[in-house]
Length: 194
Image 1 (tube, helix red, strand yellow):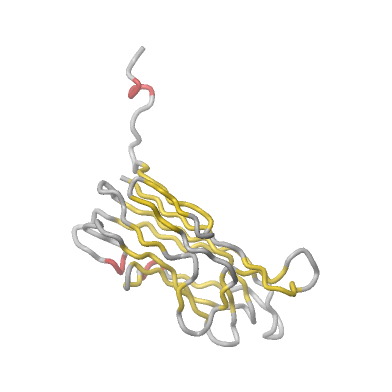
Image 2: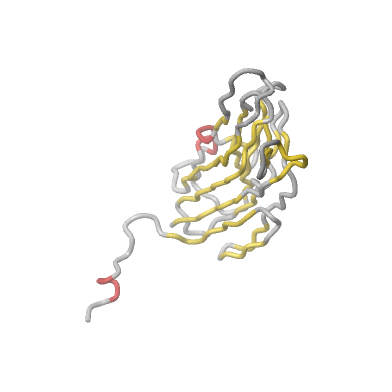
């Protein structure tokens, strides 16, 4: 019988180091780099025309020492509240926007601006490079990431006509809009690879 490494050779690409993944309900998750507590989402979040942190998206993260890349993924429910709900989302590391991660969401509408049927799950995602020759935070590149950094998503509406919400459902099990806003907790995932 040969060596185990002959039967199961090491992966040629990135190797998994740790993963933080969970529903944003205030739970704590312990991984090799430490214990992380996810935010507790308890209601829908109506957006305004000014950027605000999307509740559930924030994590203060320190990757393991031999990490070469970090994947950040934030899955959340987006809901149109007026017209097509055009809205804009930015990803930040500390106070710097990661420009290539920018995204906007909208649904199609036809007719009156009061139409508001768009509602679906959206994802803000980026892979940070920790092997860069120098820091370029605006492009998600780091020469070193050895202390805690805040990763988060911010969002806003296009204007007061094109309204939208995060972590929200308008309809539930019926032909009319629900009387009470139904919120949906997002899922946050951070994975470190060597």
